[in-house]
Amino acid sequence: MEEILRTIVENLVDNKEAVSIEKEEGDFKDIYKIKVDQSEMGKIIGRQGKIAQSIRTLAKSLGAKEKRKVDVEFVD
Image 1 (tube, rainbow, N blue to C red):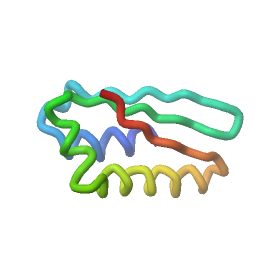
Image 2 (cartoon, rainbow, N blue to C red; image 1 turned 90 degrees about the horizontal axis):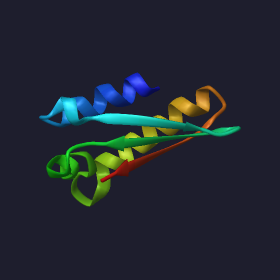
Image 3 (cartoon, one colour; image 1 turned 180 degrees about the vertical axis):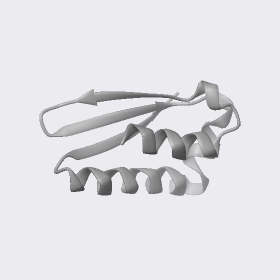
Image 4 (cartoon, rainbow, N blue to C red; image 1 turned 135 degrees about the horizontal axis):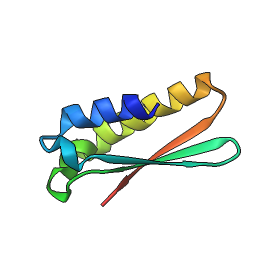
């Protein structure tokens, strides 16, 4: 899952080295915290949050295959 998220985010931003993804595991829920350069946060969120929502939807779909709840947070 982390590799897929990293691939998506790195293709959206210019500074690929500034991308970091942290995973917090719970019993049945995983939280992925994505951090990018502050100047490129708008590219990840998109207009009216559509890109961010699409990333969350994809992550939740992949998590459902593994019977895990997944949440994606974008951190400053």
